[in-house]
Image 1: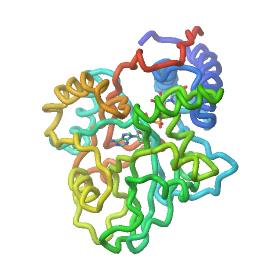
Image 2: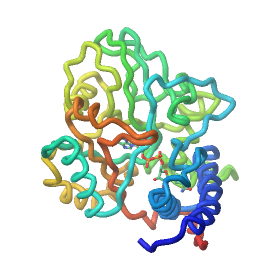
Image 3: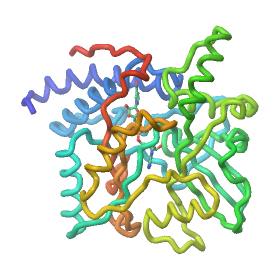
Length: 330
Ligand code: NAD
């Protein structure tokens, strides 16, 4: 890392922050990104690098301090009792090994990870009371999300009534299949509407609709992966949580596997890096989660991300993208 003075770092950060915030506005608020994710990620990582060099330059409005999404004014708001966080990411095996070293150093021994696909959609929270779906919401800024209950009720794979009278919150990803994305964009083009940039933005734009009939017509899907509260459930690991969600009737991605340390993670990454084009849903990486929920608790979170999980991000899929890269020059 080239050393730069604090004043140079400060000047660079003054340019980076508003640029990232404007890209975030297009992506999170308007569901219409103006640059590729890898362009955003590159600049975001430069911001992290500079803030790591000079922590005193971190400002409260820095994108490193905030979970991205904003809530649209048209929706009623919900408060997430337990914040819905973002996730740290790495782009190389070396960085993955650093993450694993940090975990092992922290807990004092090798750990098991539940390795999952990183589904390219938007986070969704579902609340059940006595087995009945009573609320669906978006992540929003992590603490305040949008109430999209009526829209969520139109998603076919979400159970509205569970076989057991559980009161709990589950979280996962709402996404649009590639097939539905192509159908929708074709329809929009025929009707003279602006097309969506990618399935992730199409899913976000379709869930955040004021008219549930529009959401219903978009055929959204979900993969649920987190049980937030464990009342009456005998669950102590992430892989048990996935099994339980499946037993309760949620749609759970079938590819997850448990691995000790980083054994097999490289193979998993390679396998799904090759298979991703063949899947009918977008993935932008692989997520490693410490499997033991008690260890997750022990490791805790930063203001923005859990310390017990990390995303390994795949390189961008060129063919699918219709957003053109903007070259960033400082
Ligand atoms: P993120 O989307 O990279 O990662 C966190 C999210 O991953 C979670 O909130 C969850 O919804 C999701 N996820 C998918 N599969 C999961 C699984 N199996 N387990 C747990 N979580 C899973 O983080 P973010 O903060 O939502 O957004 C940052 C991303 O958005 C970056 O990839 C960035 O490139 C992109 N972005 C792009 C632009 C742009 O202009 N192109 C702007 C802002 C952000």
